[in-house]
Image (tube, rainbow, N blue to C red):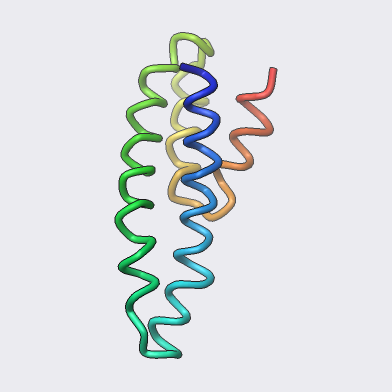
Length: 91
């Protein structure tokens, strides 16, 4: 389960960065919504998977509530999941 969470965390972070820094500018500058449509759904699914898996692995990592809230908040901050991977998932 830990390995799955690590993989989902990295993929969620990558999809978020692609959505924010590539797809959204193309949508508003290039007037092409196809990138947002292409990456929006996978990012949403990865986000939901990240949150669910965070709840499932919390006991395995023995996170206190503060750490757990940081892990959850990282999913809405650009580069946040990479920080979580480096600080909390590599042991």
